[in-house]
Image (cartoon, rainbow, N blue to C red; front, side):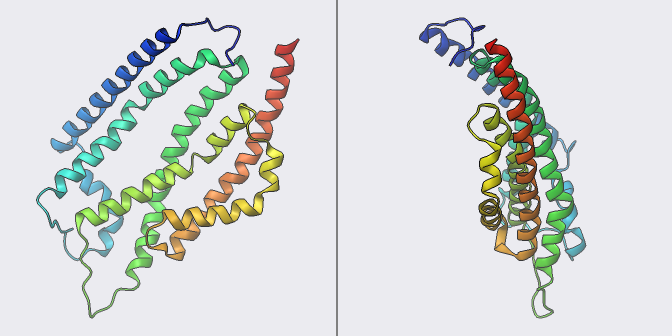
Length: 254
């Protein structure tokens, strides 16, 4: 439903607006990735040194490269990830500019803070994984090391491991924002969330088992606990939003 303040636009004008906004998003992504790759290629940002900090205590020799293109692939993946982060304000602004005319006033007041918290929670999840979860998981894996074998970490395997862990934690930390937006739109109610607490706990364990590499119990527990805690936080946030939504709808109906 379109809000009363938004003007009616013909379908072709909507398509034209969408085309230009997608063009701006693509341009922002290209610039973000280009700048990121330039920084990494010029060694202004030493990605390998930064990402290898958690594994340094367990290395007897430098990480191995088994293919000539491995380092380039890592640089490109890091550039794309960093480029997405740099371009995210432009992407969010373009998405908001396209969708905001179709939202009510109380929905607009919820979406903007939600987008800010989404970015902060994503970064918090990645930081938690990098600073705490990855080192603990590596310690668990290396506890199986034996004198009869020598563990040799390759660059591609290690970088894939650490980036998947950080991105997974960043993604699951978006749960409160998703539930907040669904609550603001009236799709999810806090009573329903509270009723399915036990199911949510099992779901958190299953999600953690699918996300964590190797399925070791340490990383499983370290992901299940914050994920379920975020679910409880989401219930509280949903209650607050539903109360504000009911008051706002009542005020707009007067």
